[in-house]
Image (cartoon, rainbow, N blue to C red):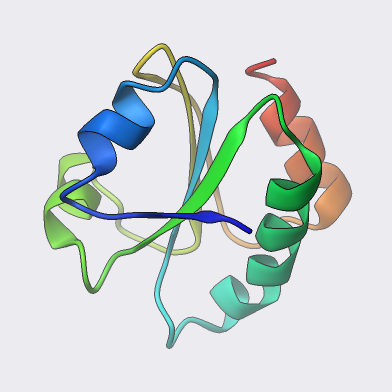
Length: 104
């Protein structure tokens, strides 16, 4: 299951992680977010070498604003507390796997 990131836990869970982190910035009303959500959940259960989670932009505006998230879904890939890749829009599973592999 994907980890739930929030404004409160973002610094410790994402920036302080000792392994790469994929953050899916999403909202419940977003159609493409609903399409990518099950893929994110599946990969979170399969990939142990990366932490995969989701951040609801409506509930956590501070973090979404800090990273200038203007459209969703947006995927940010963090390594050692730094953004190493950014992807926007729906990504099918093979493309999302390839995106994550950039940090491994």
